[in-house]
Image (cartoon, rainbow, N blue to C red; front, side):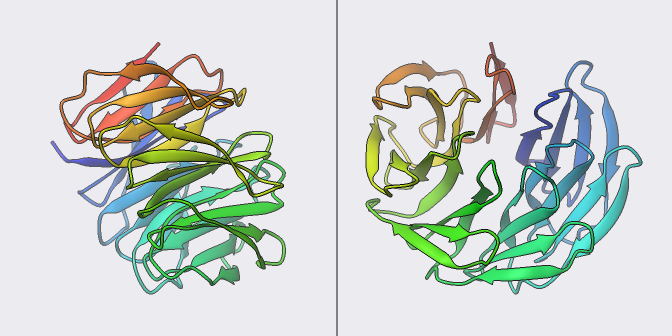
Length: 282
């Protein structure tokens, strides 16, 4: 089969999963039956990131071909192509209202786009390395970005201005995320640790240490009291977000785990691995 590079749930519904792969396509699946609804074709290179909007009407795909595309889930059609980056798009994320999407690229920039028109509204310039991750907070006022330059940056989503730089990791930052309340930011790094920062004070409030390899993904559960990390050590770990204590080690994959996510209720975890399997943990 084809190597799957990216997976995403259509939270809050959780009835669909999208997968992006090496064959330049994105596939939309039923979580219940495992049936494939659509195969989206149009990118000229591998799809490396994808994301649903919260309304579950669109899926966005980011590719090595330097573009992102928005697809209509109901009709299975391409809506718009976002062109403007000069290198591959490695991260993308919708805001909660669904009118904006951000793309992070190997060209060191993050672009903010109007979903309706496909127009680029802002370019966030400041990182000195490839972008690895970018996300809006819940109320759409802030954007957090992570970079190979070992830093995480906070931006005003409306104006595109830089607010703060979060430092402390000794190697590339591979993923960043807000909790649902937008009060905390979690970072995952190639240094094998994850960190939790207070979004207001910009101070590090917890260090998650214990993985035996780089951490490629980090996310909060919907309640915000748990953090999930995925690592090249072939495990995923569940942590107490307040204390930084490891609560559970999810073992069973035979190769590095590159993706992990909670469903909306927070009672199911999905992990994707280079062993070519996705696992669902209850």
